[in-house]
Length: 218
Image 1 (cartoon, helix red, strand yellow):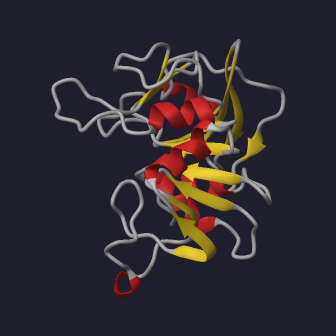
Image 2 (cartoon, helix red, strand yellow; image 1 turned 90 degrees about the vertical axis):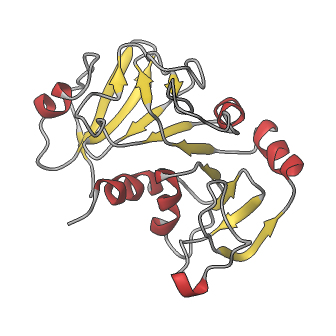
């Protein structure tokens, strides 16, 4: 049985088309690289200076100097490249990313994102997320639907310090796919076995329910 992380990563991987350059943020988004077709013409970017990321390498194939922005081992596909931070962020700020996939602590119905700080905990800083949400043409949030305590992570209004205001386009969780619109969050897809009532019970704002809801492939 697929884990929530696998379900989310598989679905996110299906958003992209040939020719796209896509940034994968740290944490859960990095798993998306494992579910892209082997012959696809999609370039994956990591903010620490890689383009052409491949699937997670086997433990005996990992190289200590080839890691993503979160410090996890990565592979590089044929034709991939590494470069300095200046060029990496020129790609981001220059509008060359079709999308960025980021994790989140909270997202709200205005498309606001909080993903970098929990008050009272030591954090190194915001990192590149602020640049990514401003520079990418589409912002996709990949996260579990609720906290470990069962509290909603999709809120009417974020309570944590914000990373970005009104920048989120899509939210993918293990329960479904949602689109952030000017009028609210629209439920686009549901996982098999999950009802509208199930996902609404774990979501603080009232979801907009269209006439047709697609089935989310696991």
